[in-house]
Image 1 (spheres, rainbow, N blue to C red):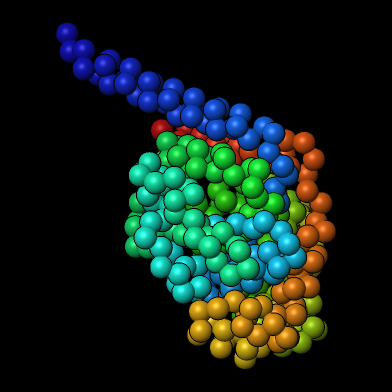
Image 2 (image 1 turned 30 degrees about the vertical axis):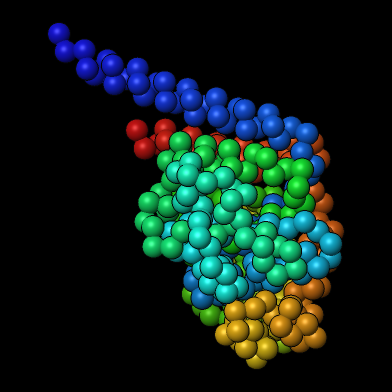
Length: 308
């Protein structure tokens, strides 16, 4: 009688038991954490300026006196560290492999924003397993008492990782610009999150808008189609104007709110930060960081079952 398959199954069960224990202990450590506002910045399409929005929103909120962390959730194609001229020795891949703690890879960015760099050119990072999600949970489990805002810069497209972070966040900011593909891709992302995962509240931000009217019209285009076909609530967050100062700031690897604080784009980001600071934070457990990681667990577990 061949007993090796039985031994393999026992080994797998023991590993999953360890994962569940790690998840539970990590969540227990966060029970007394202060409420953390988790904002996912996404868009569906690449090239809409999502990373610049994430960076400048995070920095503008830090300038309001908030303790802010910026997570580069484009896990396999890091770009936030490049955009800020940072040079990480370690990144999130080292955390997930258990080689470094989260605190050891965090970099200090402008205005004291704490930056979690992703890996660059590591394909496996875009396809996290349940155990690797548990590693992410352990990494974030000690941050609850030292964090007020977590801004998550998702990848482009509608990959599992994008969906995972978007549905785990309390607020989903969908960035659009004046391109037909931007609206259609944003709608596809909203449709997927709504119909498959029950997300029904989104905030729309028009980027690189040539005037307030254009920003409002972009929102209306998306609103009309979602109102007709989906059961969602869209809120117009505002618009970021097309600004040559932003292009110069990007070239200089600095946030526009720091490089050109009086520019139109900078003023717009600061206004958005004030709006975001007034968004309600869910009370109770859902207002803590464990809300974010609990939903990551649920998503990872759902994917693991679906893949069997």
